[in-house]
Image (cartoon, rainbow, N blue to C red; front, side, top):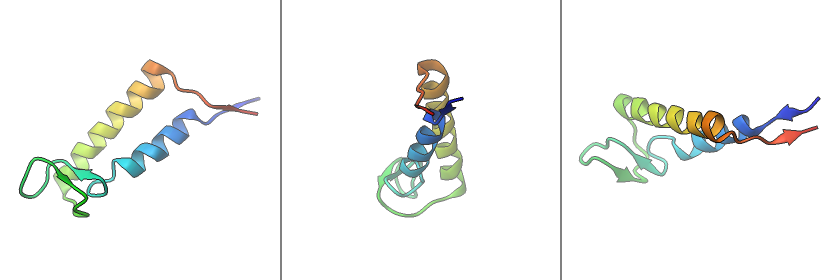
Length: 70
């Protein structure tokens, strides 16, 4: 039996990179996008969640990224 760690690794990396306010925030307080402001809002969490779901779906289902262990 082998374990597929691809989706887990992709989810962890995307979660870190797409945390609102860490690298960027869409939408921001004064502009459409701000970088490294460390603030967040409800609408920003929703937008980043949709972006996370879209990229995760593309990478796991369409591209088929797999990391087999075991």
